Image (cartoon, rainbow, N blue to C red; front, side):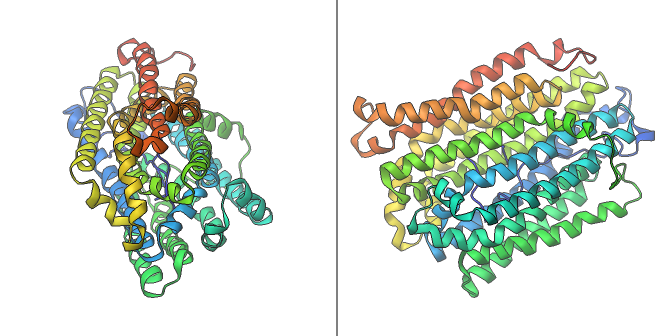
Length: 496
């Protein structure tokens, strides 16, 4: 089990397992290139709202499955092992985000590039990008697993994993480092399966894997009392089954993408990965911010502070994952409509996604305002009441974040989908790194002396850096999206 990031896209994270998925509706764009048709006169254009929610809903179902699995993981771990176990995993997030960042860059950059190739009726390029992305995922994650094994003690020292939680962290990491090889490769495959018009298969694989992970968590953690190692074993078995379900794609006669082991033009991989650079920046920057946040929490409140933030982070994760269910649905449909020169539909899809994320944020804020004690109690036992108290103090400081983070995700994904990697990357690096890093460090040293907040939460006041970073990001993202609004786009313009 992995406690995901708070600012991105971010997703993901299969509870860290996967974050962000892409779905291509079969009734909107045929998975057979010979029948590709996005003419405004076609039946696919009878209602853009129906089309949008047709392929968003399976994505949301899958992401709800992931989110549910992650929340239930937290329930089992927090209630059975304790919040120290949650803190141990949170302290490892900076390393985990490096792995996720690479996989997301390959998956999103590759899927968007494949979507464009499909729109341009270029199956050869689509196949090459698909194959190279999968090969790269396996090779890179294997090398990183071996590296983490060789330098395990140094890694723990860098991550500030103290003796209080080191045993728990090692227990989990000894298993999960190898699981990530399959897990992240499966995530990359998941993107492409959906991008090739197989949303039902992809969603079934995701739901089966998430459901199995929940059952196995209960078995290994509660019944067999395997501790955090049990959570890792549950993830491993669930990932194997999920990969096997997704593997049916390779035997489908209706698939467009074909895997070819022998590759020559690896420049295609570099180009597609570059288009996913903003997602890479999001992920790796979140790892850096988690490192800063963990360090500041330990300096101010010790490991208990990390555990308290972990509880709140489950709901930030819920917000991010559901937002990506909407935002990542934009990737393929916007990129293909952009390539097919149907800019009015691009505008319509963007408007629906923004409105939906705003509504989502309002719902989550209402949940945390009216029932905070109830939702936080899901992840603690009777011995962790002090952790719950600190989490209750964190909640009001973070509420503004939920109102805008989904919109920021949508706007960044929109820029990526229209092949504007530079402004997308600029937004990503400010949102995930520069704004929160500067604000966290500045507020940590300045806010307590200003006495701007009640004494009861003065030790936590620096956490307002996170919602402030989101709102500053929104101003920047709104500016670029206005500059590249659908009515001003030129399909044949060079990516900038």
